[in-house]
Structure formats: C-alpha cells, structure tokens
Length: 176
Image (tube, rainbow, N blue to C red; front, top):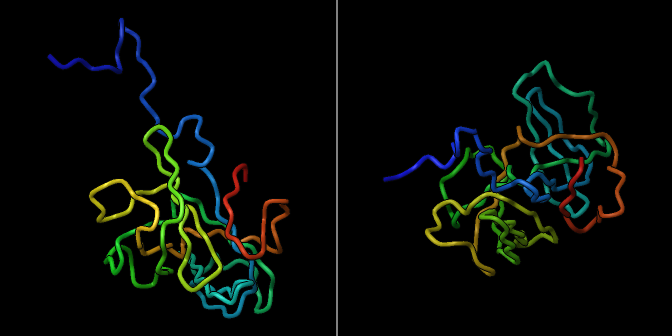
C-alpha cells in the first residue's frame, strides 16, 4: 500500500524541492551591449561580441526610458534559458534562438546546470531546464538549440558591477 510521505506522524513535512540549497537554481546569465533599435513592444541590443539580442515587454506603455546607443546589461535567469534538440519547434518564432553545443553538465539533487557554447559566437549560457525532446540525461557535446523568450529578459541601465562579469563570456551570477 502506498503511503503519502508528506504526512508523517500527523505532521505536515516540507515537500521535496530539488532546488533547495542549490545556488545555481536561481542564478543569472548577464549580457552587456548597446541598444541599436527601439519599438513600442521591445528593443534590440547589440552585444559586445557583435551578436543581437531581442528584448520585449508585454505592455506597450511600460517602455523603459531607453535610447539608441545606450549601454545596457541584460539579465536572464538560468531557468529562462530553454534548450531543445536541433531544429526543435519549441517556443515562438520571435524568440532569440541560437545553435549550441553542451560543454558541461553538473547535476545535484536531480537538477542539471547545463553550460552551452553558442556556435559561431564567443558566448556561453547556462540553463537549469531540461533539453526538450531528449529522452535521456543531457551529455557533453550534445547539439542543442538555445531559446530565450524576449519578455523574460530584464534590462538594466549601464553595466552591472561584478568582478565575475566578463566581456567575452555570459557568465552565471547569483545573488542579484
């Protein structure tokens, strides 16, 4: 007979949280660049490494005070960096998409921190999501599609102050 493990001796026990005490479950990727175009529902940022990142907002009246040429830092949560098999149909076509290759997989308490090198760019991004369409745990050298919803990206004016922020690496940061 199956028992409900959440109730032991009449007390309610805390449900298992795979991210409990795992810092990188709530970590950030940081991208620095300049605003190159503005629209009522978003903007485009040219990164320091000449890549283009689309940023959007759902409310046209919530347009932050941005201007073309402004230096910004884009902040993306690791759980918002989605990974899928190459040529996957996941996400919307307006999403940021790049081909990538997994270079590192760290696992702790059933949570994977996956580091992906974006092909043709000097970037790496980190994700705590699963690889959509993959029927086994992710491995180093697996080819993936990196997908980021423009509305999940937070823009900050100027450069974030951090000793770990590198101009040629989208590095994982926690605590922001």
